[in-house]
Length: 274
Image: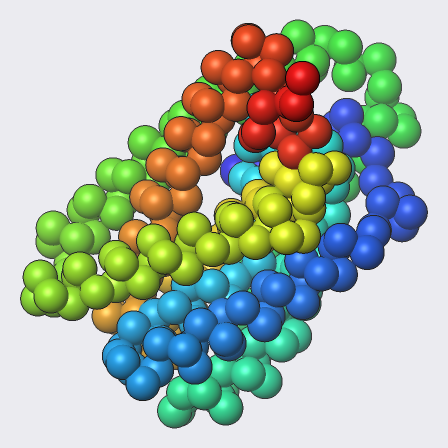
């Protein structure tokens, strides 16, 4: 993950002017939508509501800028979302989670922020040092530009294998519970991507906003579920790993096919009007 981020940061100098109004809407949706889903699902399934909240209340995944690059979209837009939502969730989750769920163990902000900070800011720092002190290395590094795509495919394979292993050997839930959690995950996940792409991003930043809101740091959600909630809630992030990768894979296939036909519009998905 850190290697993929390094390649993106190397060619995308970041500055404060990159933060836009859309990023604020994404940040608001990052916190507001999981809470909304929790209360909508709660009357029908308390466990489903808990799972939806834990799965959704996660910052933008570090892999999201990499996927934006595969779509040939603005990597810096999604990168800003990673940098903004990581501390935002670290600060708000310890306040919101105890209000919704009976949490016995105190949630420390640094426990949440620490791993995310290491994953994101170390590659950012290394890329900054190379750009400003050893820029002659950049053309040589860019010759290996296919590495992020290979790592992305490896990430999909690893995530699928981990999810399969978890469901086969570590999950002892009934089929009904698995179906419920899978359904909740798919419905909520689809809404995250669609709200980001069409309601927030629109035609200018559709793909970018969809990734910023829809791609979740599932390892973070899994850790929160196992540490502060219950093992059943951990199934949500497990299903989300598989679903989000499948969603973006199909989306990328459709995008590339329409791109070859010259029918990709500014939103990155719908055909241009002739």
